[in-house]
Amino acid sequence: MKFRIPFINRKPVVAVIRLSGMIGAGARAPLSDEAIGPVIEKAFARGKPAAVALVINSPGGSPVQSSLIAARIRRLAEEKKIPVHAFVEDVAASGGYWLAVAADDIWADRSSILGSIGVISAGFGAQVFLTRQGIERRVYTAGKSKSTLDPFLPEKPEDVTRLKGLLGEIHEAFIDHVKARRGDKLADDPEIFTGEFWLGQRSVDLGLADGIGHIEPKMKELYGDKVRFAKYGPRRGLLARFGATLAQDALGAVEERASFARFGL
Image (cartoon, rainbow, N blue to C red; front, side):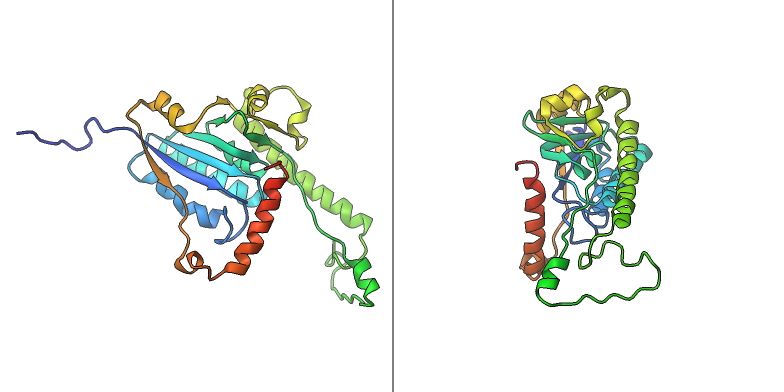
């Protein structure tokens, strides 16, 4: 008679977390700490995984949400002493690269796009349109800076200077994060932190990635041919699945499509 002894000769399990889409705030954003946080927690906790693999396909988004998600990954990795590997699909740029750097190593396809270590703020000025339509904008504030960068008023040089200062501080935080995680792997190249982006092999040459590789063969190389994969991702609610938020989803899709298009995707 054969007896099955639990936990003996178990096949190693790699928990796979898909991080795909724009990074924004709130549960409805494709990627936010609120939405993906519970998924990450579950992936690290369930079944004592040998490793966690991040599958990343993101053009970026909110720097705060990028930081929160990356910090959660690092905290869990260090608490549970589980190695983390990142695999870039089409793109890991800007906030998407911020997430990739949370891993212990980064692997990409030869045609993957990585980098864009910079910060951007974009908007529109509608004051000329309002004037042509005979519409007068009226704003009353308590506090001289309360109407900073109002898109319906003429742009003020001091507002632009203030905004650029804020963007510069966020950029420095991004640079510090990349340097802390990649360290001596980074090439001595001033272009790395200009917001430029590169394809897979050039990213490896610059130290932004560790090599060209895909998730299944690389995990088998590191953890053996018998490795198993447990996939984790956010679930959409019942109403969302049946299109109850169609208008918001459509607007979000347009914004996301535009963000991917910046990288020719």
